[in-house]
Image (cartoon, rainbow, N blue to C red; front, side, top):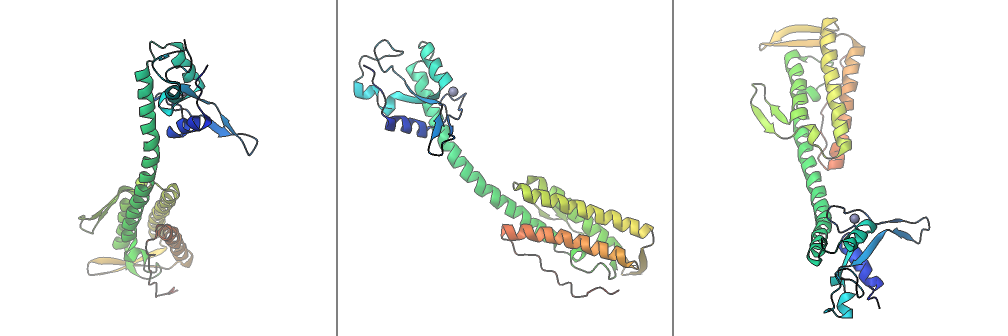
Length: 276
Ligand SMILES: [Zn+2]
């Protein structure tokens, strides 16, 4: 007579390895939904380590019937590996099979612990990076009106420095000293934030190119010097508007990320409305 496992024992064996085959080299999923909403498909087997009946693989005559049908004597496997261990009992010894079970139970536990740990770590790491970017945006180039006068050199440099900071995570001051060190946008775990930061950098690059073109086309007048710095002013309203709108888009996207990350939104005084 076979010493079968009870359904409760089978369920326990299934759950203790996360419903996956316990062969460490397999770890295949063994359950899925059935078309009937009240059922599930199971392609796994609660296999006996020492056989359930006389003459079976690894049969142990010294074990009691109770021991033979206990959780201790079972292992959850996919159909292929349940068949495999019974084909060659010399190769697949009791020790080896029990080791598979131990490894797979550990793996199932790690799956749960590791995932939770990572998701918290990932979120915190992302927030740290976003906070850093927030510091990078905290400069006049992102706060003052474009249409007003300012320093060409400082403006162009500010945009360039911010692009570098977001790309490689290093914010420098005007003299090239490192102010803050963090991580570049490719390190963000949140794919939506990464995508938004990509767009932000693209827009900043567009601002730099458009700015140079505007100077070249005479749409921006380079004014006199003050304290050794050159000043400019737009005399083309459409161009000025484009700069303002593109920058607004950048700040809008970034504010959205800040909101999701629970980081205080950037505050822009922007007191001086268009002077044109
Ligand atoms: Zn398997």
